[in-house]
Length: 411
Image 1 (cartoon, one colour):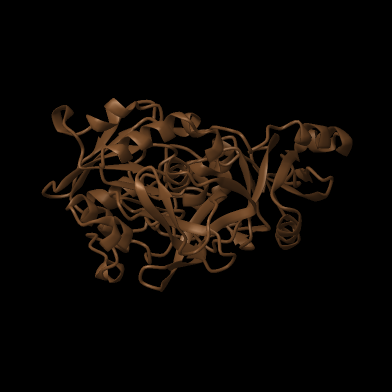
Image 2 (cartoon, rainbow, N blue to C red):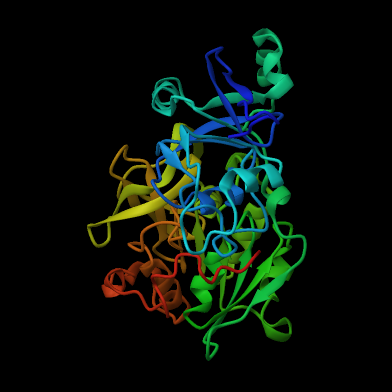
């Protein structure tokens, strides 16, 4: 929490779009911020959450009551900066304790200009968002918190809506870069950065894949010549990212070109939603989304239940096991959330393409879904997508599957 020169706590207030307010203490930078209020149910992994570009323009409420106990290190960041628009915690750690910690979470939030609030009843706030849905919110501290609530509410309601926003270009890499394969190179992949987490290309690199990460604005020609020396890549990957998939146009046209040419494709999170739209599925905004590292998903091909990491406020329309005819052949809903039946994955049956709504890179989070990277390799080896129902769900071929971010490269 932030304190003044005499040690007094700096007051802060959180104002929701519907007028409900919560008062507490400043945490991180003193000032003001607005965004979309969302909550994350992860008990650990707050550093990976903060640096996930998919949280751009969102104020994250942590449902875990005690946050900051392991401090902030130099290894676990999933991108070059903290992306959340604001941060809400109940009981921040006063003294971090971890051998990798380099500074406190509060100091890092302050250094990166992230306005937060502590001392808030996050259980009550989360219940409110579950009942009313995700909404705009503002966090105000110091002098800003002293303004009349009516003025603060006007500032909140004037913030841009998440529906209809195309944000990928705001979080994407400005220039292409390459993550080399670990050991012998088996395949090359063109990864379109829509808000990619740095551990994702690392998971592919651990499997012998050289990954060329491209900006979200990359053309189809640039994607199809991203291999060594301008050659065609063995596969194409679309990453996670923020924004409304219904507002994306360029990326979907590129993806349709990939599907037409039958280049093996794998997408996660936002990439799953874009595959859905490219195939003709609709998308919609969830009431309050899925965010955390403890979401149960069933792989309908194996009937296995995975505990998975999520960060999405939009989803693909469809039903568990549904098969549709598309311009690229048949496509089915391959994964489903067991909490609310939301579509969590798609698979083309007549084209080499599949996607999931969650994050298999396990940064931070469980390793239940790591087999999906092996399925992508199988697809590039020529295994038909309709046959990707083998024993890869029981395997993890990474060099160090327990290294949750220890080798993360700053994207």
